[in-house]
Image (cartoon, rainbow over all chains, first blue to last red; front, side, top):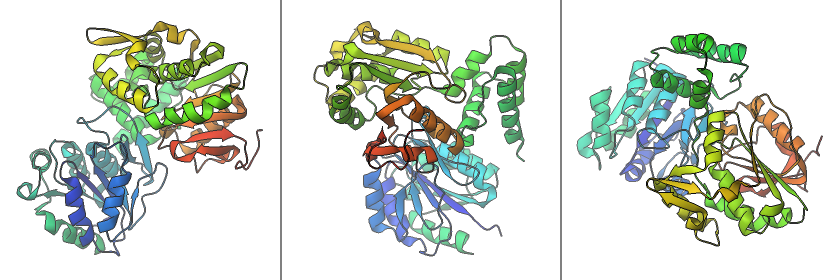
Length: 189
Length: 279
């Protein structure tokens, strides 16, 4: 079985609540970085980082450009910038045009994370009211990565997971409360 | 190695050898996305077919440059930054008989006009000169025209107020249909110039340099070179303003600068916190 090296998570509408339920279920010894792109609409991601930090068993911080994706850390994309993963697993940012009406865009994170970690990436696409992330999820699967989509019937907004399933399909389609355990299994073995 | 990564290397080589534009020190992930976007825009199918046109087609280069520089900005972007410039930096600049400002990577000019408004309202514009530079000639032409979509003006108007603007933003433009045109008096002391941060050198002595969200596209080495260029261009005690998420912690050249407003990435050359002095 492939040793997984990183987790990328994308969500939009309803994403805060979904992340607050997912993060406490992760194993505190998880040896891989977790990179999150969540559309917030707020000009500063600081509040999201703080709220998630209260629930997470792992440290949560804003992703900084030129810094490495640290194992056992939740890195959150800053507001107003695309978050990209370079081939040396360091982050970079861009203010290029919005993708799927979003910046940060889940497509951009997933596509660059897929190029960097390839078959060792696990990507999770969750609740959201637009289709950002679907193309990115396809890139993840095309490079041999593992794709989890939140079961749309358990999503606060089902457009995003449905688009993911339509365009990319998934290796697992799970209810929200089963995702953390699946990530632990995939990344701890 | 991934076929597309090989193609990107060929693209970089073609741009450098054929046209003297060096993108080898650009952050690879976003450069790759931009090249992929160019492939879609020009319907060339593969990067190599794009390279073919770059090598052989007369007049194609400007369109490639345009696609690679992707100028996205807004007026008074990050209003707190402009408020801090207004409150902390302009009062210091006011002590100079002449004020030189370099806006590096001015793209479509939104920040050039923001700056001009700031200086105007502080009563400093008459003795100021703004050098607005970019390596993309098409962007410079747009910047010089100062015409933007009306729908953007609503956001900018809010930004202007949050930045501490003392008039009404609408005083500075005339609206026509779907467009606004900024008051051309605002550019009376602006000089637009083609300057490439990758290859060009110091060209002025500046009291303030703004370069926001340009360094994020550069490798650590190129970022360091550029910060060195800024250090050598600034007067002692001059100011540098970067994008609010730019990280210069890895750059040796950054040690010459002191934080004025750390969270907003406003720095001063020299000062008590600086480890090394100019040159």
